[in-house]
Every structure is written in structure tokens, then in C-alpha cells.
Length: 236
Image (tube, rainbow, N blue to C red; front, top):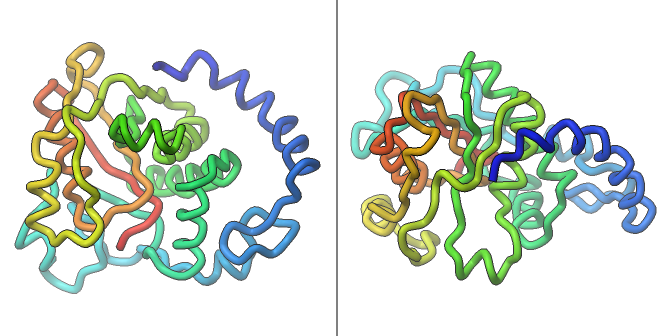
């Protein structure tokens, strides 16, 4: 589904929707539960942002060579907002089990800052797709909500139907680097329609080893994408 046509209307309506939600459900900080703010200054100060000298490929802080990429380099450059610690864990868990669009929009703004910092120019924003079983259980894909927030900030095109799961995969939780890669290898398919020669940004909530983003990138590159990059809110 192409969201570009509805983005202007959504941006106009969103402040009114947010006001209504604030009346029904008073805002609480996603990190600590403090009333009155979606993301309080204390929680924002409590995250460890990934800045300074970063590996140009995996995006982890380095001093010299990158030990991660020397073992298993990802198929795409990856950048993440902050480490998966403290209040950011609580915020992402909240988004995983409750479709808080205002929180997702905030996170999309964080990712937009990374895009501008890296001088990336993605033509398409693509969320990492959920498997059908998980999507039916949850009712939504949190990566899509974050990607929509990013697309709105950049004025870019969000598309959900060009990348899909070719098969269900087991949860990556608890798997090491090599098993994670095997688990998602060949798990995604990309439609060549509208992709050839494009620059695509893949969005997810969390990156652990980069295996899922790499598998998505492989499918997109096989479909003719010229450039692919990955963004996540957190990095384990």
C-alpha cells in the first residue's frame, strides 16, 4: 500500500486526533510512566545515543577496525538511534504490544535525524514485514508505524507491499549470530515492480546482529534496488 497520497491529510488531522486521545487516555511517558508527557526529558537523557566514530557499515561505535563486520558484515549500512537499554526498552515494548501512533511518530522523528546526519536520500521507506501469524495475533506491525512517522518527517513515500515474508521464521530471541542469519536467509521476497534503480530505506524497531535487515536487503537488491540502507530505533 502506497501511503504518499494520504500523508498530507494525515498530517493535518493528526493534531486533532492526538487531542482527542489525550482526553480519553491522559498522556504518560513511554519510558517511566510519568503523566503529562509522551517522552520525558529524564528518559531522553537516560538513553545512550550511537554517535561519534561509527562503523560505516554496521553503525556500531569503533576504535580502529570493526570486530562485528570482520565476522559477518551486513548487506547494507545500518544506523540506530540509541542502545537498547533502560527507558528505551520500556518504550519499544509498549509500542510492540499497543499501537501508540504518537510514540511511533516520535521515534520516526529520531530516525529522520539519522537520515539527515548521514545525508541519505531514500526514495522509498519500507518497514520490515511481520509474518502473517504474528501480524494476525498483534493486529499491526510496529515497524510500519515507525516507518510512517519517518516518511512523514522526510516527506518520503512509504510502501508496505514491495517487501513480504516468503516464509514464517522462528523468533530470533536467544539465537546467536550465525543461527540468526540461517533463520532469516531467503525469508523475504521483493516485488521488482517500482523498485528498479530506487534507493530504499528499511525500517525496524530493533537491530541485534543485523541478520533480518541483511536478509531484507538481499531480497531488495535481487529485485533491482540500486541502494539500500537500514534504520532502527534501538541497537542491542
